[in-house]
Amino acid sequence: MITTGCDRRGPDGEQVDPREKIVIKFSHVVAEDTPKGQAARRFARLVEERTGGRVEVQVFPNSVLYKDGEELDALQKGAVQIIAPTTSKLSSLAPQWQLLDLPYLFENEEQVHKALDGELGKKLFATLEPYNIYPLAFWDNGFKQITNSKRPVVHPEDFKGLTFRVMINSKVLEEQFHSLGADTIQMPFSDVYDALSKGQVDGQENTVSNIYSQRFYETQPYLTVSNHGYMGYVVLINKKFWFSLPSDIRKVIEETMAEVTLWEREQAAKLNRKNFEKIKSSGEVKIHIQTPSERDEWQAVFAHLYQQFRSVIGNELIEEALRTKRTLP
Ligand code: LMR
Image 1 (cartoon, rainbow, N blue to C red):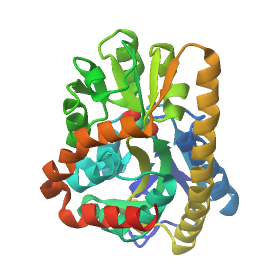
Image 2 (tube, rainbow, N blue to C red):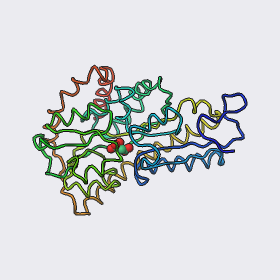
Image 3 (tube, rainbow, N blue to C red):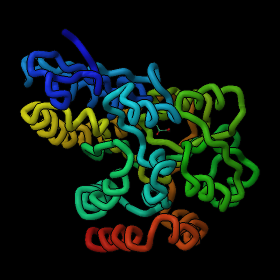
Image 4 (cartoon, helix red, strand yellow):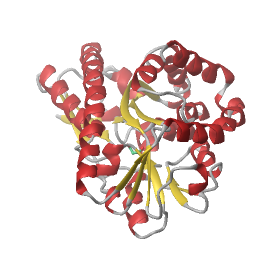
């Protein structure tokens, strides 16, 4: 018998019947050849192998099942069992997640990992407690770069009058662009290519692996390597489903997730580097690498955001992040 999600119940009405095959639907919005896409598939394969086929993880990439703005709801209702949204998108449930959208909060992956694998990560996880969601891991995507169709953006004033797509649910990301004199439109990831190619927005911010795998670079002749913000994922499982699983299965899933998380983080760095070279060699994009003094200019424009969002995000979380950054320059 094959059943999925929370409908599977054993005779005691709580635990999964040990004879049943367990199907886990893992839905995400990016291409397969991305850090998240590859890691989801690896996780699926390993869990299936390690449970002797008792658990089947079905991966649905590219928003084929649910897109941004739908997948969190689908997870909470148990229509899918696992999703891995960008952290910004959780701000609709808990605004504290906008912490990670603050520009230049972290300077490298090492700082990010130290923070998310430590106290800060625990505090963020705790905000999800009321929502029938159980957090399993933090995965990397990488640092964001800026693309646009109009002109090189080097200094803050170059943004004036341009319109940028921003991820859904994050006011910090909107304000980041507004403070540069640009407009914003919030949009699900699956709509971005179309919006860029039809000129509905002039530009967007994203990691190189997303810019490459979604072919954004084909419509965006200007790329600024600014590393101005981190974009990462939180892997979430439906809580009711999670606690209905037999403990031996939960153990396999947890151990496999921990292993795949380390692999995924290495893979994300590699893929971003590899895809950057591909964009460069396409010859279609004029690339500007931000200099330290340009970075100072951007940072000065963004500084007020830390104050503006302090009460929304919480002083404690901001200070915890900055403390981590100081200990790992
Ligand atoms: C985006 O919406 O640009 C990204 O969050 C997509 C993703 O999942 O990497």
